Image (cartoon, rainbow, N blue to C red):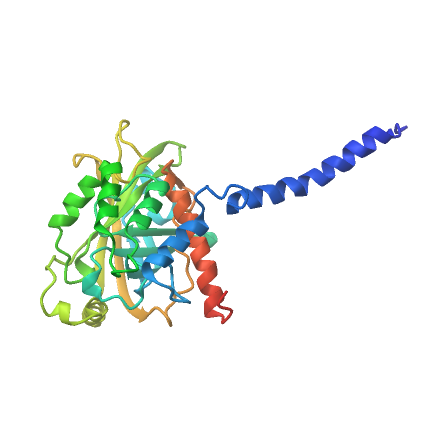
Length: 348
């Protein structure tokens, strides 16, 4: 077989194409990092504004900095296997490594001063798969987009002159973002509980469950506690670590439990907006019970090295088109990389 020699022009074109590939990759890297478009909102900017709000605390998460590690298992009853083929929903037991935390970047914040709390879980599935999820003890997110979240953080940064947020800046933000009014109404009447064990934790973003037939269902999920709600007390406000103390005391007496409740959307429900709750009459599925058996300080605990990226999903669970998901994933990665370098002593 005879091969026709390349002309000089063809050789130049081929070399140009070979050189173009790394150039495109470099440009893509710079674009993602925000270097070519400094007006774009990037994960670096998100992490920076979170750090400005909570202060610089090397070695800690940039948000939800104060927390405690927990371990246990998830006991699936098989009820959710009809709408998701994920192995976690097959009847049986799955090991879980979790973390309770407070919102904000200050690891020394008093427990009573932070009303928003979180539960993060990493399910260790067969075959090396994982499901990681982060939930919050509130019914919906304050805003709808990552740009609005960034603006909210800027609007509530402490004023250097007073050390407190400027109320006029916050009023201006609310006037521009009236979708936050339902969240403010909820927070005004909300009374925090006296225990993580009695908090209901909601996955505010929507996801898609995929069953064995390839059918998809838009869902959200919640961890509903077995422990009864008790409001925060005056004694709790005298102990800056009362949540951790309470958790360890309760676990010393026995396991703590939550039911995993899956809410299935109707066709008209919006899965792209975490600031909008779905109607209360939507179908729910009790998928099983989370059983936590032990707690460890996060510095020595197994949760410390886990990035609870909400987009680490097993087969059978997929992301929705909620824009907050990609932003959370990217910001979590930036935070994780920074704090692990700092913990290693590099302090970069």
